[in-house]
Length: 496
Image (cartoon, rainbow, N blue to C red; front, side, top):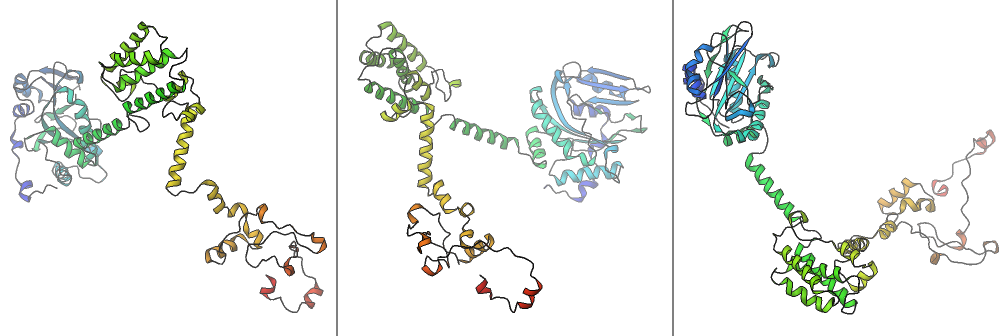
């Protein structure tokens, strides 16, 4: 944060001694490019506006002080329109007393001090000119002139500056580049007061440094930080441009190996009906992986061996196209590369390669989409298994208490089951009963037992505890006889 001594606020600024002509020359030096506009309003609110060259404007400015006088902050080639901009000259604030919060001071002195203290708190420089306009304040930061092409950079900084001072009455509508500012020494017809300069440094600022300070005060990234972010984003896009984890040349090297495997499976010669297509695909792979001068010889050698039925003109045409494509600048995508780009599924469709054939031959890239998806799923399962992730069947077997409801077999409630499980009283939840765990014996009506083995606590398949579980008896309202005959409640252990 920039700190000021007390004497800084006590010393009068040299800006207060500026005449209207000096003010015009401060805004628009005579050697600058472009023209400025002077404007006035008479007693009937009729506007008189004209564009002057810079030397003439400073000489005629006194003629615009009898009423509401204004001057354009920026310079133009002709009429005062954004489309005719000649140079961007500064950033500005129009502080309106009607926009101040309730209870805020409207006197120019304390109000301007609040503005300066807010600038200090946000580490922003004091403006070039601070003016009392009669019913508000105007703050202007003059800049080293910017060309009209810098308007997209200038506008966000102007918007951010206004947002920072909304609490002190900044007018959000005063943000366009064709805006005019009041002339010092002119009469404000509404308040019947003269606009006067009350402070300022009379300095010009570099736009980049001032804009970064405004963005930092607003909590936004600086231009350099945005540039670095764009560079990192561009690098990520370039790294993600190739598919399947392979570069473009690596992918077409794999496709070339698959084409040679197919050729071997066909007995060394491509079947009739696929010869032209196969040789074209082979030449396309060479356009991605070989030098353009070597491609014609490689294509002719392979054609003599694999596609003997093709004519010399057909082979020469395929080789010529592949060599011409190989001479083009390489890129990561078909949109940035002039070569042919075929996916493995497209090659498989052109050559009638089935999923079973691709798996039998061990093809790397040439396969239908469903085979590629199946291989991807297998790789994912292997990766998860290597990382120690259990399969779905194992997880269901381990976490199936809610589905199996073991508390029913134990004869206890669900909450009691989980409470005992947390306390360690139930070591293992009961596993689902399978056919191998069922003991088949004599019929129960003959005194035997055909119940499955019990694996929960307090249940064993002994002979004296093999009585089938009875349905709980429905509780009824006790009668007078049962009340008199009841001596004591049964022990809790016996009840359980």
